[in-house]
Amino acid sequence: MIDRSASDARPDAASGTGRPAPASAGIFDPGLLDRCISCGFCLPVCPTYRLTGQETSSPRGRITLMRALESGRLADGDPTLAEEASFCLGCRACETVCPAGVRYGELLEQWRDHQWRGRRRPLLARLLMAVVSRPALLGLQRLVRRYATGKAGRRAVPGGADRPASLMLGCVERGLYPEVSRAVLELRPELAVPGGQGCCGALHAHNGDSAAGRELARKLGERLDGTIVTTAGGCAAHLAHHLGRDRVAELSEYLERTGYRPAGEVRVNGRRARVALQDSCHLRNALGVTRPPRELIAAVADYVELPNAGDCCGAAGTYSLLRPADSRAVLRPKLEAIEAADVDYVVALNPGCLRQLRQGLRRARSRAKAIHLAELLVMAARAANRSTPR
Ligand code: SF4
Ligand code: SF4
Image (spheres, protein in one colour):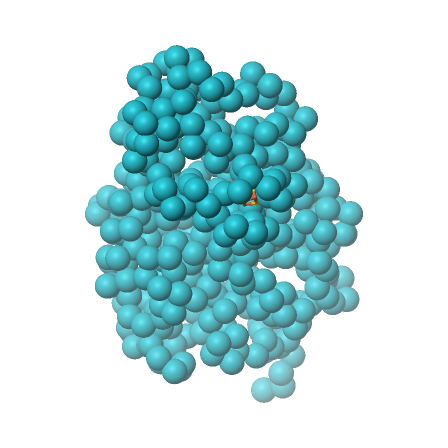
C-alpha cells in the first residue's frame, strides 16, 4: 500500500498556502454536493482507496474535501485538495454502487474547474489541450483521415442504418491508432467520415475546463451528421452527456443497433483464440454498456471474462501521463489477471486503455496482445473471406 497518511484532510483553513475560500464558495452545484449520505458503499470499488486504504483517497473522503472547500473550512490552496483532485482517476466506479445517486463525475469536473484553473492546471494537460485545439492540426487530421479511409476524400454519404451516421476520428486515436478507424470502415463502409472534425472536448472537461469541453462537444455535434459513432468509450460518455444519449453510439452499440453479424473466427495456433475484454470505465460506469462488446467477442473467439474486467486500467485520460507511478499501480492487478487467464488477446474499447494495456503487457513480457474491438472483428472477417471459395 502507498503511504498517504501525510495527505489526511485537515479541517484547519489556515493549513493551506492560498487564501481561504468564502463560506459557500459557489464552486459546486449544491444539489450535487448535498446528495452524498456518507454511507461508504463506494469505498470498496474505488481504485485509489484500494491502493491506499485512506479515507481521503475514497469517493466519500473526496466529497468531504469538496464540502470543506465549498464552506471555507479548507483553504483554497490546501495541498490535500490539490493531491486528491489529481489522484482521483475519474473512473466513476463509485457512481455505479451509490444508493443516493451521487453524480461524482460532475462533481469532479467542477472541482477540477476550480482546482486546476489557469496556470494551476498541470503543464502537460495544458499542452495536450492546446495541441488538440489547434486548427493547424486539421492538416494532420486530413492525412490521417486519408489513411483511415484508404481513399482521398472518401464520400460523405451515410446510409445503411435507419438514419445517417458519422464516424468520429478521436484526437488520441487519429494520432496513435488510425488503423482502428480503418478497421471500423472495413466493418461498416457506409459510415460517413466528414473532414474538419475537432476534439470532442472530453480531454478539456476532465482537465479543469468543462466550459471548453461543452463548447467543443457542441461544435462537433454540428459537424457530424446523425448518430456519432465513436471507438472511444470516454468520448462517447462525454458527447452523450452534452448532445444527448440518442446522438451517440460507441462502436459495439452501433454494430448491434445496425444488425452487424460477425463473420469468421480468430484462431491462434490452430485453435480458437482466447480473448478477454477490458471495459472502458466511462462506457461501463456512465453509459452502462457492457453486453454488446462481450457478445461480439464471443461470436468470433472464446470469450474469457477477467475477474476485474470492469476495474479501471489506470489509463484514465491524461492520468497515465500525469501520474505514471499511480497509473502503473492501478494497472498491476489487471496484468496479473490477464496472465492468470492465459489469453491470446485483450480487447480495449478506448485508445487510452489500448495504449495502457499495450505498454503494460510489453513491460510484463506477456504473450497476450491488446487490440481494439474493431481490429479483432476485422481479423475474423478477413479469415472468413480467405476461407470462402471464390
Ligand atoms: S456511496 Fe454515494 S452516498 Fe454513499 S458515501 Fe459514496 S458517494 Fe456518498
Ligand atoms: S472516480 Fe474512481 S478513483 Fe475517483 S473517487 Fe470515484 S471510484 Fe475513486
